[in-house]
Figure 1 (spheres, rainbow, N blue to C red):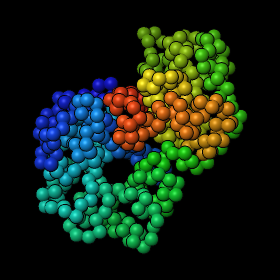
Figure 2 (cartoon, one colour):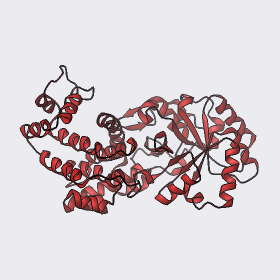
Figure 3 (cartoon, rainbow, N blue to C red):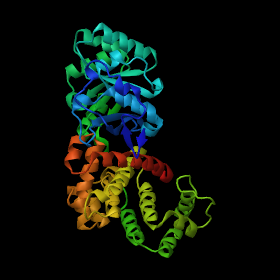
Figure 4 (cartoon, helix red, strand yellow):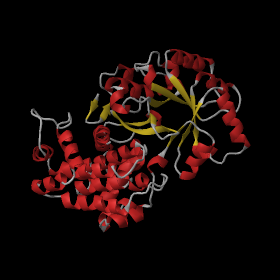
Length: 429
């Protein structure tokens, strides 16, 4: 089950006790699984799927070895939780092993919602090919990760719908890469560039006409083409943030009432399913009393920021998700202020949202040294927290564990924050 955002491996899932072949590891006890998702984007930068990164935890809360990343436990837990909570209405890309495919039988997941990722292998025997054929016949899509230049491994392409290639390996182009891509296209395969981490890799894979893209590039500093936000609008955002942080209800009401559009949004927000009480509110004062002053300050920042960019919604979702997770985990770091943690997470994506260098934005926003250092250099308690959250986002669970926070707690917060971010992004759109 999903308890406080953490996937419990023993939540009514019989397959945990039916691990087959090389997927059985009697030397390890799996208590739970930490999980992160990374969006897969099409050429218009719309989200077309999520790759799920996962690792098991031992009962003591430590990362189990990578050899225990058991797909059968993951698949069963996903069936228990429901894909809707993990990936919304997008397909989930799940890494599986040949041993899993050979032994899994009938998958307890809706086939139209799942893409199974299998590493390319030159040793695709008849049993594996037959199993993949059966999985495909049941309606599941298969994505091959990497390529096989020749031999039996190429038979995998005939059973797949997509191939994922490392952007770092193909970005250089050349005749060999072009020939490979042409062969893949002749098999009718969608081309997905993964590990896209730099603007150069993104532009190179776009030039090679890949169909979809995945990687840290899409939330990295300087990653997005320039979107000009007038300096006075940045100043207005910061002035409004300063004016409303710690303000009384009367002051908040006065600031919000100056903007009719903002007033409407707050009444709508207070009456939404997320906050709704027994009776609807009809005034700004009632809306603010229902939300509370701390939440109002958060929402003011989100509403203001949403009007300053026309970037794809997934990027704003990343900013909101990161901000909320930083806020939820603030108690893990001594001297961390939750409101500052939220701002650090939100503003850490500002350069990608607005297409300007971060240091220029920090100057325009007149951020204090502590918040600026947290964002640019991960200094101070909020900076260390931000580094932890970003490591978890990219599925680097080992680096996250080295930051001194219990992974169980990060996992708890991650999915609470994801749900909140999905809702918040829809509300401010």
